[in-house]
Length: 183
Image (cartoon, rainbow, N blue to C red; front, side):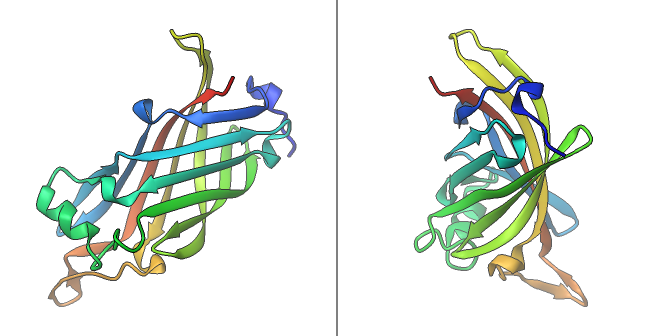
């Protein structure tokens, strides 16, 4: 299905992610509950084309900016056991395609973590556009996906007996994005 960006109210061009009004969060099972965290240092842009299907997005997340509200855990996650931020300081995403499915969107892309690039699909909700108090035009998006951390070489775990382990393999990733149209 071809969907013109004008049908969404978007203007073709560059829309920069506003990190002060956006979030990159995740959740992973830890013991019998989920631990949630975020990355606080990230950047990116959406290149809106006249046809939504040819629009692109890129993002770069500084892995050292992880925040799970526990300094000791964050320090361990930064080590070579888990994210190895000394050798792999960033996680990146770049689109390979966009498609509309009803009122929702699927954004296909390549997620690179620890030097391993794998395809992912983001389920994206477009929340519309509007003017901000500073004279800018903003677009809002929510996106989510679930990955298996082992697909990116993140193998650390602690066995707890039987088939139980400290960490689950699935990581839920959620993005809340405000993008500002470049002037």
